[in-house]
Length: 85
Image 1 (cartoon, one colour):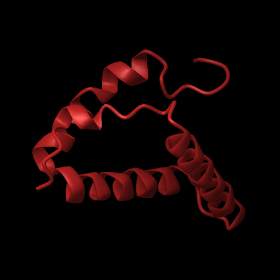
Image 2 (tube, one colour):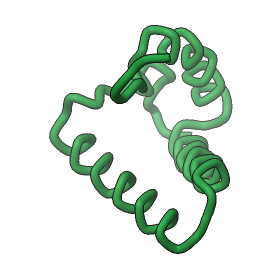
Image 3 (cartoon, one colour):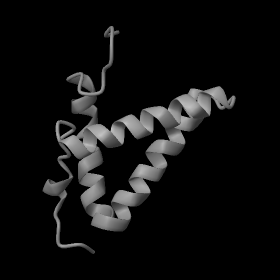
């Protein structure tokens, strides 16, 4: 396992590399939808692929700790785009 800790998984979308990466992911979503894939299936696959990469780099425990903080981040609106529900 990498020497980075779970704390390193507090990823900050404000960095330039992460903003650029998000553009690529959003473009992939558009392409998948245009190819006829449903959004839920593609989103599940994207999350799965992302988690697999994080586990390969940081290990299961660090990623599990990172994921445990996701509900609060979602509730705070960190992932909300446009109108909030």
